[in-house]
Structures are given as C-alpha cells and as structure tokens.
Amino acid sequence: MASSNTIRARQLEQLSNAQFDVIVIGGGINGTGIARDAAMRGLRVLLLEKGDLGEGTTAWSTRLIHGGLRYLEYYEIPLVRESLREREILFRNAPHLVKPIPFVVPIYEGAKRAPWLIQVGMTAYDTLSYDRSVPRHKMLNAEQTIQRVPGVNSSGLRGSAVYYDGQVTFPERISVENALSAVDHGATVLTYTRVDGVSQVNNRVTGITFTDLLDDQQASYTVHAPLTINVTGPWVDRLVNDVDVETPQYIGGTKGSHIIVESFPGAPESAIYVENESDGRPYFIVPWNGLYLIGTTDFRYTGDLDQVIADDDEIDYLIADTNRVIPGAGLTREHVRYTYSGVRPLPFVEEGSESGITRKHLVHDHAPDIHGLISIIGGKLTTYRNLAEQATDLAFRKLGRSVPPSSTARVPFPGANTGDMQRFAREFQAWSGLDEPTTTRLISIYGTMSRTLVERSKRSPGMLQSLAGAPNTIRGEIPYAFDLEAAQTLTDALMRRTMIGFNADNATAALEEAASIATEHNAWSEQRRNQEIEEYRNYLKRFRSQALEAAH
Image 1 (cartoon, one colour):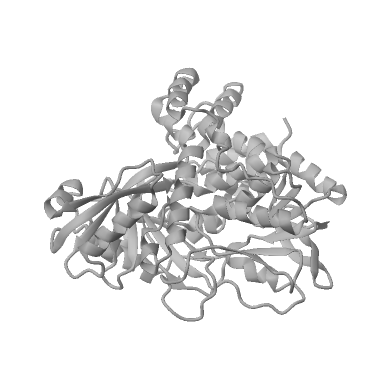
Image 2: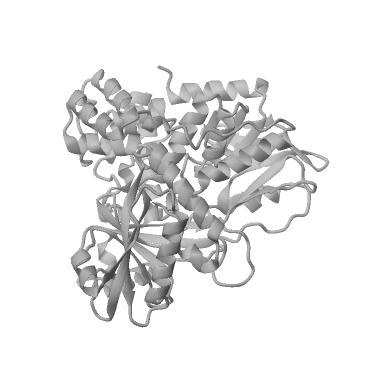
C-alpha cells in the first residue's frame, strides 16, 4: 500500500495536467463538507488546507451539535429549525461521532431569564424539533433538580429545565471523514498547502497559487479552475484582500475559550447549561471524553488568528462561575488540565453585543465585483452540511450547469457503513478479540472503519497492543493514520486521527512510543523523529497544557 507521502507526491505531480471545476480553500468542517457534497455530485474538486484537516475553527468549538436554544432570544427561528433538522441528520448519518446528551438548565432567583421565559423557550424548541429522535423537555422543581444534579447550588434555586441536544466529542473526525468521502468520489485533498494569492484576469478569479509547506524547497504551484470557494473561516478577509478589487470587511470574529478539568466534587452526570452571574452570558459544563469541558467565553478579537490562547481572565471567569453553580467543586487554576481557544468566523458588526451577532451563515457570491469567487461567512458546526449543500448548489449555477440534488442528507459517513451500529459493536468486539473499553473507544472514533484498522493491525506483530500511557488504544492506529487517513505529521496522528492528544495528559505519556511507531512505519530519520516530537510539544503550548509544563 502506498504511503501518504507517496500519494501526496503523485497528487502534486499530476496538478499541472489536472482540470478542476472548483477549488475549495479551507479544510475545516465547512470546507470538507463542501468538497464532499461537490464531489458526490460529480464536480472535479481540489481542496487545499494550510494546516491539517479540522485543525482550525472546527477544533475550537464547544463540541456540541445543537439547535441553538439561545438563538430563540434573538428571533432566529429559521436558524434554530435548520439546526435541529441538521442535528437529526447527524444523529442518523454519523451515530459513532454524534450522540444525544441531556442538558439541565438551573433556574435561580434574580436570573436574567425567568422560569416562564425558559418554559416558553423549551416549548418552542420542542415545537421546532418536531422530527426529533430525543425526548421532549421536562420542567423540574428545586427538589427534583437537586436529585438530578446533587452538587448544584441550592441557594435561590427555583427549579430547572431538562432537554436533549447532541454532542460531537471530536468534530475533527467529521472533517476527516468528509475528506475521506470526498476523495472516494474523486476529489483531490492536499493539506499543508498555503495559498499565497489568486490568479486574476480583469475582475475574474481564475485560480490560485500555493506553496507546499512540507517540501524542504517550499515548492510553489499554480492551479486553475473557473470557481474558487473561500472557506477559510476567520481568515476569509485575507484571501479576499488579495483580489484586485476594493471589498468591505466580512469577518468580525469573537474569541471563545474553554477549560478542561478532571472530575471534581459535585461534577454532574448531565451537561449543565447556565448563565454566568457576572454578565448573564450562558455557558456549559459538559461531561466530555472522560473529563469535563467548561466554556465558552465570547469577546471580540483582533489578535493573531494562528495563536489564539485562553488568557488568565477567561480561565478565572469560567472557574469562578463553575464554583458558584457547584459549590463543592473547589476548582482552581491548578485543576485545569489544559485549555483551548479559537475565533468564531462571525459576520462583521461594528457595534453591539457579541452574543447578538447572528450565527447564520452566508454563502456570498462576490459577483459582479469579482467573478469566480464565493466566500463562506459565519456558520455553525451543526449546520455545516446544509451550508455545504447551498454552496454546491450555487457552484453548479455559477458553472452554468443544472443543479443535481444533494445526497449528503441520506448517505451515511464512511464510519457509519452499517444499518445497526449497536449490532456492529457487538460483532466487532467478538471478532476483534479486544476488550470492551478498547472496542468502544475505537468505534467512537472510527466507527465501522475500526474493522479495517484491526484487520491491518492483526497482520503486524505488536500492533494490537495498547500504546503505553494511552488506555484503550491500539498501536496500529498510528500507521493507520498515515496510510488511510492522510496524516502527514505526528501531531496530525495524535490530535486529529487517534484523538489521544485530548486525553488528560495530552498524550505526553504516549508521545515517545507513538513517535517510534511513526518513525519506523514512515522510515523517518532520527532527526525527523526528534523534530516531530518537538513540534508536537510546541503545538501543546497553545493549550497551556499542565502535563507539558510538568514535563519541563
């Protein structure tokens, strides 16, 4: 089987003779979603991403697939309905990645949102999710709320609402599976390719120039297509500004930060959705990946988009209110295993509340000012598939072709290639010979592709053994990441394929062994091995990783 390096080299060699209908710039959830939909409908697609798949905005979300209960306050009824419909599609088409999760909304005396308003919101939410597969909401009194969440602050507690939404533990995997599906349908996907500028004839974009960041010589390439789709999230304006036409500012991003802690006294079994006492902004306390994810913040941001880091004030903001809601928690900065932070690619709004900026997406055709260029402005994790469908519809119209129907609403993800995931899980465990915690974890990441992973691993001595320091893994996941999932670096393998980089210790205990496996498999030099380890450690600095700091 050809290695990822060999496949990449072949793709780059063939670019000069390749003909594309669409160039998609950006390999996050929206970009890969567009690439998948367009390729499935027969367009010749090239996707370019300056880093790895799902490395940018996709990775910095609160990891929820939700209807946006809060958006009802801003009368964004169509957005809520769209989100709830897309949530159900993901429950159905990616059951290994997206799962229902209950939320408890405590209601306190003096809170910004009164009980009657919460009740109205919940009823509207149920009405808009008429095709739901999850239970309706329930209203609990104070005593019932304490029974449900024993650690919750009882002082001034009036009751709570309980409802269901969705959680995607690893949205990076949605980007990966979208890309795998796009490639299966003929798309070319190239990561670590930095777009340097556009090719332009008069007011028409005819292609782009990019640099291969993995090439020691930083080789440059120019490719052409009648249509380019700018799906670069917070970086949208950078690409548009390269065009020789005066344009407005499209993106006005806001910063969202999260903290990750281990279980603490009073930690809830259900997610908690509560408003922060200091400013009334809702945030979440969510059981996630065997840990707890707490966030998010929402502040306007104009700093470095490539190095967005949670600051001390944000960490203290989240800790303080979590300790208020769960008085026994006793959280301090020392309990924070790591943080992560990113910028929401929201439409530019000069003034007003950050929370009030619409979360709707805009598929923006730059014509007649600029022909051949479409930019995606805004958008939510939950609604990426519908955004991709709309963008692909527009692409066909811009190309002067009839618009065939999209099939992404009914075609399962590559990892959901079964009619019954529970039955697959039972049969997979019996066949694999692995213990239940390991098979459960593998399925939650790879879905039905776990079988291919284990089949390959069985053929190589030692590959079914666990990675040291990474429970419920198998060593064969590292070669699999490079051979079948387009990983190019050790960081790709740990953070966006195996996902063990999001463990409590950020995979620092497994780092040396994972590097050794990757080195042997990819025939890396000792220098390359050491470089990969150092680059991973540098990457973790953005997370303010406690394990990394302890190691130094």
